[in-house]
Amino acid sequence: MRGRLIFPFLAELFRLDTAAMAAVDPDGPGPLEGGYDPDFKEPVVVDQDDDGIGERVRQEHPPVRVPCQVDTKSFEELRMFASGNAPRSRIDLVFHFKDLERMGLVDGDTGDALLRPGDRLGALYDKAGALVQEVRTPPGLYVTEARPIGFGLNMAHPHRNLLLVAFEDRQPAAGRSA
Image 1 (tube, rainbow, N blue to C red):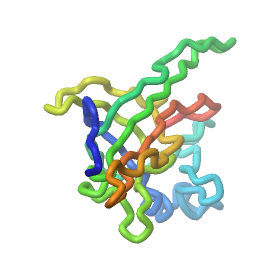
Image 2: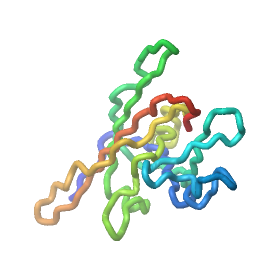
Image 3: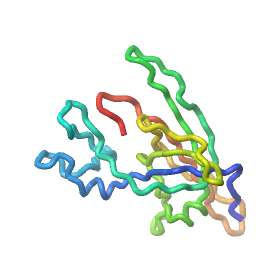
Image 4: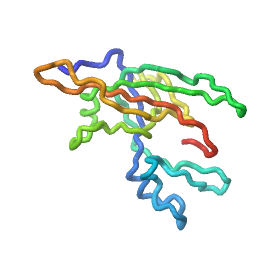
């Protein structure tokens, strides 16, 4: 017995495709050799249209809809700065490992969930597929933490069962976010 989700919704997830980004040369003859920075573990920012503002070189896997429980910590909370409002949002989603395993979102060799920092939440849907909440991008909501939180209810055959994934907005910067 591995338990189940309570009041499930469907999360539309856009996983960051680091392999595809590493293979792209975003600045042509420039110094960059790929679109993914292995040191900072995020897409590089390149001024591709010579307007003085860097654009993220981001490539994503096709979206997947994964059953989840939703816990909204804050959504577009007002934060005023001298330059205007920079709302803060955080949504925690709880996924069941049996759903992740069924959808191929668990690494078979390591057992790690394939939901990782940098992945993006696109929207939430009800079980029938009707849109409940779309996430505007930019600013977007991105994975900042993904950790197992439950290791099953059956002592005779223990299994891990839950994965908590925190999605937060990215702080505004000088460049365009995406």
